[in-house]
Length: 409
Ligand code: ASP
Ligand code: MG
Image (cartoon, rainbow, N blue to C red; front, side, top):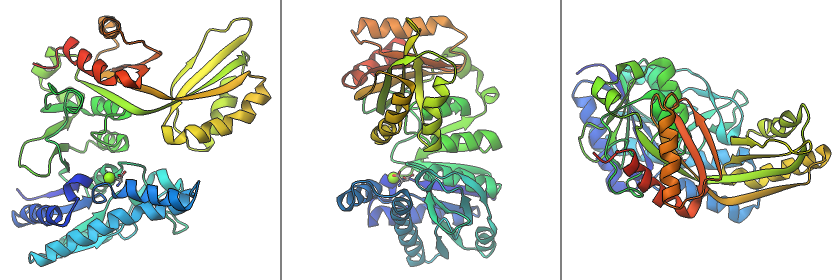
């Protein structure tokens, strides 16, 4: 099968030298079959976590710019080693940093967004019969700063490159066989899905399931790039992501709930006793937006005596920063206090057409009630229902919902 594919190899798939040699053989296999291939690689194993821990040992609050530079090294190591392994196996290959691969980003250093890609150098390598091995998750700004695209974002590098190169498809290869109906570590009965739609995978990703970086799903959908999520260790079909209107009819008709996602990375902030008047929500969320802190599950209560509470969630790493940013704002608004908690988690059910069927919400709440699980707050989208619950009950909630929505068969 001629053409061009982009393959992304996740951290667990390149965790040591032996595995990197195996990945190199798999990449070479594609090349030898006559298909052009570009590989995008993640940092080896837990390298990024280790780099973060190391940074925290030298500084209480490492700067974003230097953090990005530090993190980018993990992927560079893997790309160099993978190219060397390919050379050793008798193939032409060249390792490229994000900068060398032509990936230009904005300057939110540790969560940058890709602005454009100049695929010229990669094209030239491919045309010359060489295999480009691109360090995932990074780019550079017009000021020549190195940036990274956010945790887990090597997926995004791969899909963005696939789009820029007009590849036939993008393969996201990892240590699992595809996308499951729930995290198999929490729900042993979870099943691998053959197909899923872009919008469903995007909601799952946003709901904290680490199957695919949300920006990768967004890009895939926007440009209609076919994405397959599968195993780097075994040649199995994996899960194919398709447009909603291309879902096979049996899949569509059988089940409206496709999968369950959970997210332990939840910090909650509550601004207690805010006077209820126009402009309050703007005053609260504008500074968070300016600091590039992602906010989710926003709840503003009905006010009593013109006083209300506003609460929302952020990633736990942003909890301290968000609370510090809001302390002066709350004071200025005349709010009583700002409280924060780091013991909640999100559990979500995702599937096309959910919101149009109120019965699904009732079933979710009923299932949690029966399991004795208290719901702290609820948010929904067209195709997702998310409940905030205590983190200690996430496993139980996931298993109960998996059964209630008949995901086992
Ligand atoms: N190494 C980075 C991370 O662990 C990026 C990635 O693996 O996609 O977040
Ligand atoms: Mg990683």
